[in-house]
Image 1: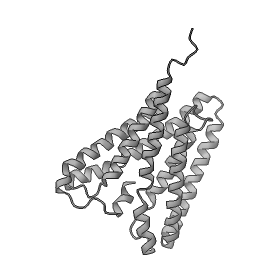
Image 2: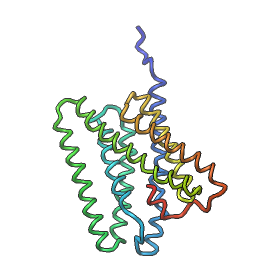
Image 3: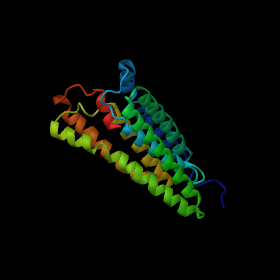
Length: 235
């Protein structure tokens, strides 16, 4: 019997998809930079909402935990992408806290503490589950639900584009980055045979594809699609 690994191409493909997903995710993580450049320049958060960054931080923390060896095996690239994402979201939240008015600052700080509190509960609760497969299922279901809800958030934007027949509320490069990242981690999940990865990213791929189709369909009748306040609502 041959001792050579019969599935080297699957491992190579999985790693390639994971690395590509990390690269494309970077486009999502840096997308709010123009918004925060404006906030810093004006010294005010104006009408921008900080809630998307709070939710994104919680999502990244849960998915980061799922990717660790304590929960699932050989998912390092899931851990890396969500570690970077969590760092970006935390920076955005801190900047928001610096420039927000006092009432919003207090609310945001309370939500930030709540996020860390929820994450600690999930972390400690999952570690109390002695059976590794049950622990993986528990955290996997949470990460899957979190990702699906995050990918479903652009449904409001999709509905708005269809109603207004304008893509000014849907930045192209953000939709493209979402599509490329989702496809990459969908393939990564398939090659890993991990339903908690390929299911939410498969849904994300479909939704991002709809956004791109709508973008090109309505582009000719649209105004400028890079208005900064809408980056916040989308993320």
